[in-house]
Image 1 (tube, rainbow, N blue to C red):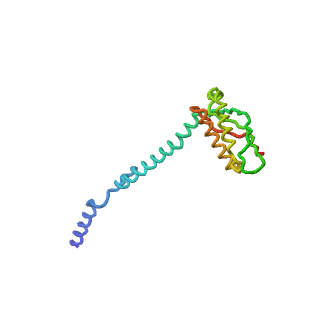
Image 2 (tube, helix red, strand yellow; image 1 turned 90 degrees about the vertical axis):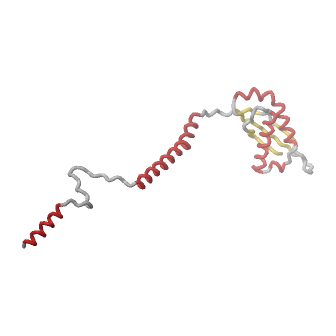
Image 3 (cartoon, rainbow, N blue to C red; image 1 turned 180 degrees about the horizontal axis):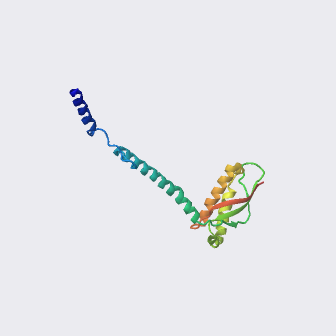
Length: 177
């Protein structure tokens, strides 16, 4: 029995000895916080940088442009009526002469250009007359033909009024007869 008592005493000593591998029990009322590993911290910081950069970029591209648009004032367009133009079209071999009647309006970007362009109207009308007289009736077929006519007249007006600039040539009326 003495051997059993010695063995029990030894086991009691072993149980009372602190276990190096076992973690001590937390004190009541305190929470123990374990720090994450370095890999987790690096991935978290990288994710924050990517999300923050994306948010900043979205703000700059979307928000910045919106603020610029709000600041720019919309100027009303200025329109200048041109005299009616009546020309005979180039003869394509048919006996019947065809005529083109056009009512044109010039669109200007600013009201201040009107006094600069008014003295140049004879030059603009000359450019219109010489170009329109060379057209054939087939040149005016369809919307593509009218678009080409509008673009060419705009180009010719801008050459005639240089260094000033006309935004567009607009048609009020076009009649081919």
